[in-house]
Image (cartoon, rainbow, N blue to C red; front, side, top):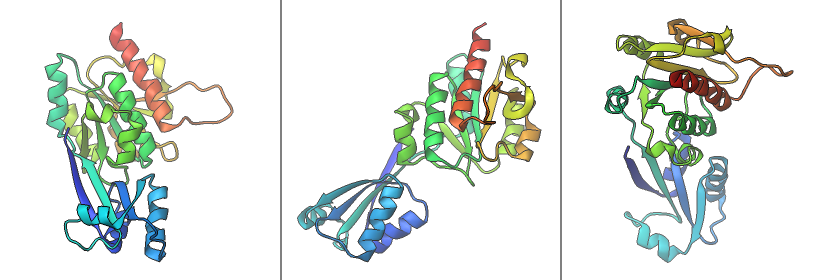
Length: 246
């Protein structure tokens, strides 16, 4: 999985990059710059957990490709997405039945990164996310995945429900997490499988849930009624791992 990097120069350009949701890894700001636009950039950087480095104007001049940095240069990057075929090919190359994670409504990059980490450790062959209403592969996701993003392919698709239908033709069964489902220990989760996880607030969307073959409920004994999405993914993933080892 490759990594692309580019620089963005100038206050307006950097602010526009933040507004558009572009992942920014780090920002170089000239020492002493404290005007309105720069303060706004700093606020956005802290909100997005972007690394801020304060440097001299001479250093920015050396980095600049345009000569018009206005005291601010951002380094933006994004990991390249895999194709569905790449994920299935990874399973075939390992001589294993496909094990996929599909994420619906996961908008928190920390949750996404944690789930990619779990997917890697559980031996999943890849993660599939939708293009809309979902976190993308940002620097925060990469950090939270603790390096797993370098090894676990992530594909981004236009329509998750349609993708499930396509993957069913390849013989994959799908199970989604939902409190109203069957206790996970009572389900047969062996064989080629896709684990569908939704956000802790909204859960898996109706259309996606209807495409799933099984609905798994995690037994809960406490007073609250839901787990964090990444924790739920881990619990269900390792029940799948347990059954695959039997």
